[in-house]
Length: 393
Ligand SMILES: *Cc1c(COP(=O)(O)O)cnc(C)c1O
Image (cartoon, rainbow, N blue to C red):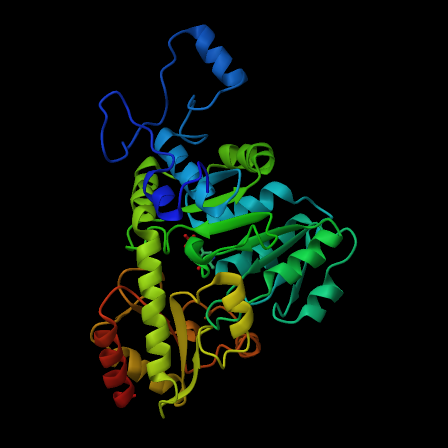
């Protein structure tokens, strides 16, 4: 946070640029490029462009810059680079900093596309990646070795909601000089203390809570000015993963209400987890806010909140899970999360379908597991919908 302002004030105002018209809402600079007042000015800008001097929208744009500044201020990093999607941000951060011969340690419970980038893409270019059970400190201790270049993790895993002790992993990584890259989607910028706990680079899919209304793709990489401008920017601007100015404008508007939305959704998720715990149709209710969750203590200390997603494991397996999904009347079947609408997903047959059954089992993704992203509807309506659908499962 900058300018000594509070979080919500920063989310509403920070980074806004007003044109000569004094517009209230941020302007959308829907332009691919910028006109230079002279040939000399063009030369000077290509040589060294100052703040608010733009060249081409693939490199930067005023609406996109406003989004980058606002998210960096909230995350507590010096700078940020916006990307076309969460995956453009994750792959950009990794590809920009790694080269053949580098060693990376990653938690194994990852979003499917992150797993693909680490397992299939980086290794193709001579990067070695070791995967560990992120909740096992000993596994990190064994895998991180002198010369390890980077450590990658999702602080809260999808869809089983395991929570990794970020401070502990960062301490181990920094002891060998490794860079700590965190995909922080599930923690959200509202509950993130990632930088304070030792993350060097924080990546978000803005598609999730930052938009929060299921409209647009976006992503962002947050880090030091040096890392963002000298390592990330050259890679991103030449490989083309730029965020569109229109989507940046959507994300800026998403940020204004982010704190209120995420806190309301997390409170509802907590109430739902508590209400459904012990239901005869459920083998497990997975939510870090439940005292029985294995990392309940770490999650509370690390985030000061428990997030907007929970998972329900139906005792009756896939058939019961499908009957449950098909019986829901308010909650929709889709695969986004962080949306204002509550959304259910059956990971084994959708987001994690690509994994072999043994690997799904090792990650705790059973045939009965259903992920629920809690939206902004009335909590009572959601609980009633879930209860009637469970009765039919
Ligand atoms: C959705 C998601 C991504 C990818 O984001 P996109 O905007 O869909 O590209 C990466 N990591 C996590 C944890 C996600 O949930």
